[in-house]
Length: 292
Image (cartoon, rainbow, N blue to C red):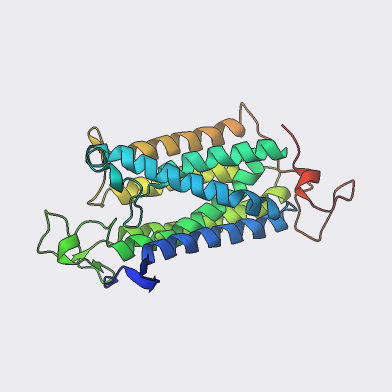
């Protein structure tokens, strides 16, 4: 896999538009599209995600940047003018997850909708967005792994290589590994969301908890071969975040299926056009998603 070469896609009125930004925007658009498709299939209001997406996206990006800045505080405390410059990368998905989830919960509460049904749909979109957005790392020649001569190795320019490997040209494309996982995860989560109304076993929130568990495991394994990890104490920060995601995901799946049983997916959440609700509801979110 060759390097991209020029990280700038094109210029508009003298302003450079970078591939990194285009991949991120493409990921966001794909995420919103998938969430709307799933919402329609579940009889939920697809317009709700359009209403909240701008606020959630901006907040998630801010959270992603803030988390990265805090991890690199020694550098940014000396260069505060660069803290807001995200054109060259420096976004952490873990910060985006925390802030994004909090904002979705707030907007659901304000709209009178249950959080978990929407969180299940949204994480499927998030996984798809990650699969596309990860290619921004390829554009910036970052987030790659240790040296390798495998056929799919990525070529890194000399000025972008780790100091420990100045004479090595090809490395593990860890961004590719995560992108492939994220794509498979998005497909699995979408299937899970659509399966929920037809299953007596599945519970609201199962897609959310599964996302946290699976992404935590995948990120932990991928991080083991990366060369640019940021550290908290003796371990990479991604290790600590992965331990937390795995713990919350596995713990909530266990609790919601045992001593703290979760709510089954509402039988009104059916495939669009196949309304079986007792009241003959048209499928709007207000008719099926009010609750605690």
